[in-house]
Image (cartoon, rainbow, N blue to C red; front, side, top):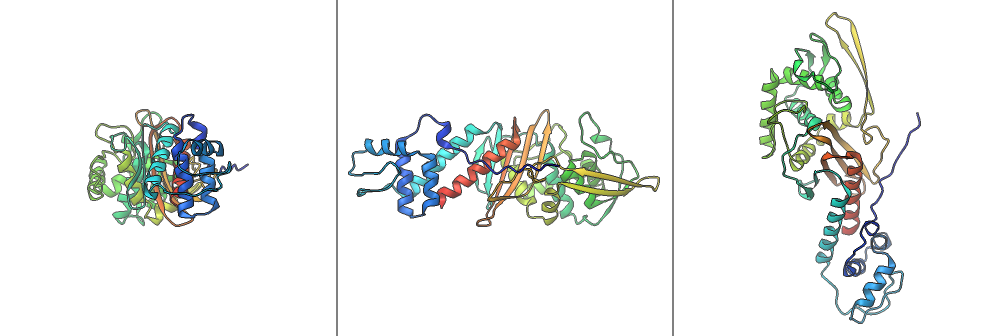
Length: 355
């Protein structure tokens, strides 16, 4: 099979906006000069603010300053804007550009400390679809059930049109880790129901465990009524809360392992004692390696879709240059994978600005 690898496209800020504040161009160059961060960061400004714009900005200024067409300093600077103010202005510009680039009705980007870097309707309650399964996996692992063998019960609650299923049979015996793999790789709803009944005694009992975990994580705008994310009254979260769930999930080695698999093989014992086999393949391009985000490395995440939720995606990344982690969520999107590449491009730009 031919493998396509796409490297993240850095957004050309100047390419999308016809109107530009010329002083921001000047601020960008001055910031590079003040910080002395070298040619790599200067090229960010050269790309964001082309030389013609820089020249026009300087010609409009009444201070005794002169720059060459390529941004080389020739004159003297009597004053310079505060560095923090320049950075904040440029971050605000990136925020506006990301807002124009993504189709998601809800979005959140958190840093590794849980601080919101970007939000669109970040605290608006929405249906999370199968991103719910991240919380399901957290609850199972915190309950200490990873080594269990599950005997499948009645899974009526997850059978509806369009539901992704393993087609587990009542009485089938299957390893818990294999069921978690089915959650993360295939997004199987019957696997979610099977682990919920095993761990919580019932769907309702497990949902209470999910809500207890949400309270522990201080998620004030989330409530769960099932383990799989099929649309139900009272089942909701927000982009910010979902990003916090993702932040917690990324701390589990098992979740990181399973969420980055492109395929997975399962063997179980059917109710008749015969061996059953399942071969799972991931449709997540970040997990199966068809999309790379250099220098960011994909850690874990979860897709989701229902008619009510739209396309959803939660994805955690690590910047391989400094080890910093970031948590991105888009909800009710028209193009969730494209929105995620825009979010990562935004993070790369922020890192370049910050030096």
